[in-house]
Image (tube, rainbow, N blue to C red; front, top):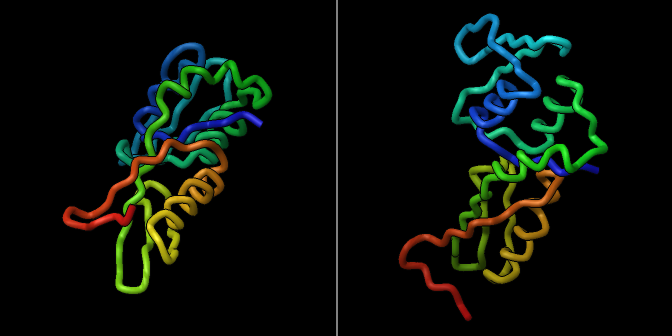
Length: 147
């Protein structure tokens, strides 16, 4: 199965607009763009430029909507260069630790120790995104992490 990165909508739009896809906006209303390209199906691109598009939705747009083959991962090497880091924010409370990610809607994890929650993040976020992810860990200023 090919891996697709999570990315900002403006980056996905740039991929659609450059060769060999060559999509162009034919009509726009707010953040909704109707796009067309010679020899390709029309596409409605409905994302705000700064919105984060999850990997499974990137795959849907490029494979199902645009028609790129999903069996040639080498053809997606440009996408790997655009991969963004997933931020994980850790919180400490009296009875343990928990984490959330502003980049993965609805994802959170909780555990007794910081190390346990880090492990849950390293396993859970790639699962939630349906692909690999590079995690960037954040702990609130002044918080002490046990060794």
